[in-house]
Image (cartoon, rainbow, N blue to C red; front, side):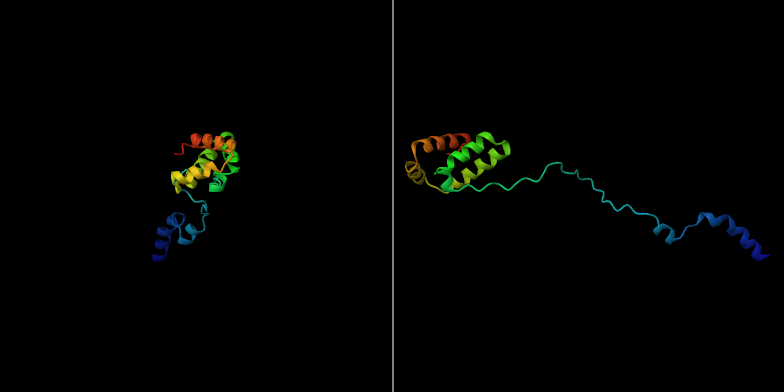
Length: 119
């Protein structure tokens, strides 16, 4: 009789219980969920390096063309490079470098400095 009573009590509970193994066997989403928005921008190219030789030589034409024809990011990058290249020079060094340039390159340099707000 005890066995029958025990069976009568346990039978209704058979479908209600679960084991730890049952919980572990359910599929787990392997995706990582974050609250951070996904970036839609492409990685940016590194900033171009601008040398003193480019600024005060025939490369000044290429620099001004990049500023005039490039997008806003390229203009910013080139101008930042020009400002950094010139930053370590004194006014007399800049004047000496300009005097060694052709008249045309001096004119282009003046336009580049104006466009990039240098000096």
